[in-house]
Image (cartoon, rainbow, N blue to C red; front, side):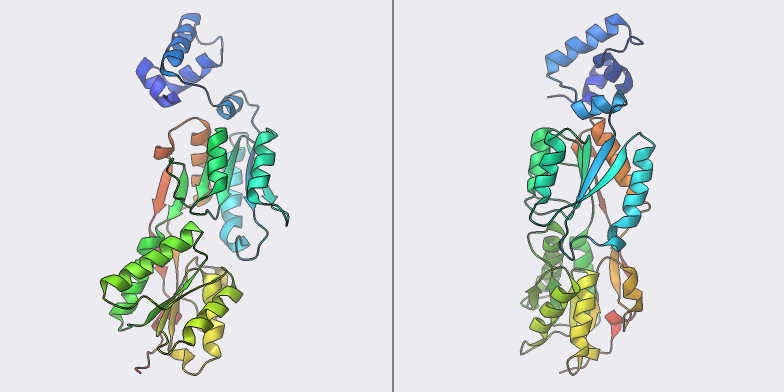
Length: 336
């Protein structure tokens, strides 16, 4: 089945002209409207209902669901991005609605309520899972959406993500270059795509260097989770000399665990996300973050392009990871 862009190209017309012809606007000649409708019928093109409402200025809402569980969504991660995204969507006549998920309900429940009730024209999804039922549901309904993070879906979908594999591979290699051989990983839940690829990047670097990749503990993506996972690693007979943590929140919890053991001040640590609080920990937390200017505007742009019917393969952005070096990654190592 052709999309709007392909249909326009086959006819030698602009996307706007084809769109308005399909919607029956009389500023497009009757002959052109007939030609466009016949071509659409031949190739099996069906206009996206949400896109048509947007073009007719009837679309008003884009929804983002926020889980209530601790550690899944935090204000430092998203408020600035959502504010910018909302501003850019507003310029297109759309309002961004934040929908917290009540305890006892799932994000899928909220998606169903919005979509089946025809309350939204598009959705923004965050904290993606490797097998994400929200993505599968929205694809089955033909609702435009963009995810903050990738999935393992066989059907392409729009996303913005950071290259977690490359980032955690590079962080591990940096520790190896500094002389570390027992490099542990404080991992997030592996059903989440971000946690999985970050663990995979760490493990690949260890395997390539011929080092054991058995110093890994998985826990919730919170300070408490990081604390408990770090304690598990520190109780090993050969404890790590460096820790690569899946998130800054987990790294902050791990720092507490290091303060509670003898020799903890000689264990280096790095996180990911560049939370503002990391600059005020003791030692200050070295971290990583996704590159890119004004990600909120980028999300809004992809959403609008998805609503307009552009192919998902053209709406995927993978950003590089950069290091924010402070003090925690270069603590003096004690040789044992």
